[in-house]
Image 1 (cartoon, rainbow, N blue to C red):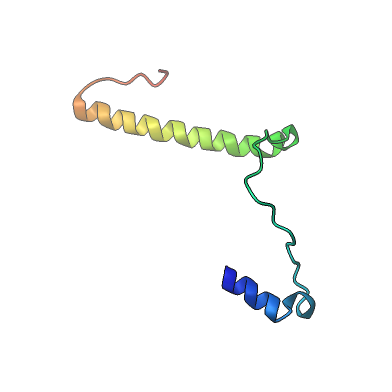
Image 2 (cartoon, helix red, strand yellow; image 1 turned 30 degrees about the horizontal axis):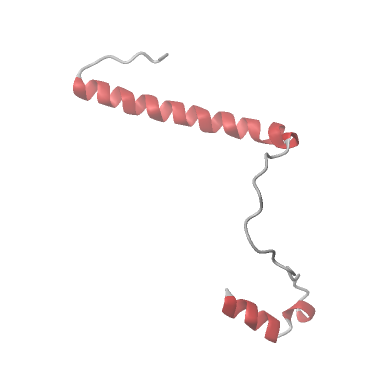
Length: 77
């Protein structure tokens, strides 16, 4: 990364190819904050899909273990 950055700086790629320069990079890690609630509608369907896949995967593993060790599984637990 350092070599590529130096090469871009030395060859003046910002003006030659119209590349954007990041500019000042602040030190440290930004403080954590909650995401805006406006994105909730955009991610709710993906979150539901991930939860469903997780539930099905854990149920399949539980049923496999139940069959191997001869005990019953209640899907609603």
